[in-house]
Length: 179
Image (cartoon, rainbow, N blue to C red):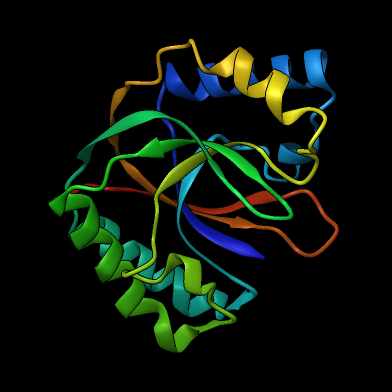
């Protein structure tokens, strides 16, 4: 899967990396490292027309001003493969950009995840996935539950993380939002 994302700015990028390192040290959680860039995703797809997506990303970046984002705490996507994450608060500007991205990439994407469609999208910053188990989820949540995740930061980029199956993700494109 590949993802259209926004990378976190400093100091939040470093804070998430430090949390990932702590989760590895204290709980053995390494699954998150398959996508080694602290970010939140606008959408994920099994494939893109990479020439076309690059042009669309550039156009969106040139017509979108940086915007403010806030987080609202730590949470879990439940199920057989739980994901522990920091929630990103949806607001009208964030939703407008997400809808623009979704609409402009429909015809140049294959295998878009329905979880990232406008009615289903729950923006988040992943902290652990792929190796969260019944045995480690309690201690991990205990560690995270008393930390302050009420952050506010500026989103100023639109990036594509290229992540072929079985490989660690790599940053393929990055465009600065300049509006």
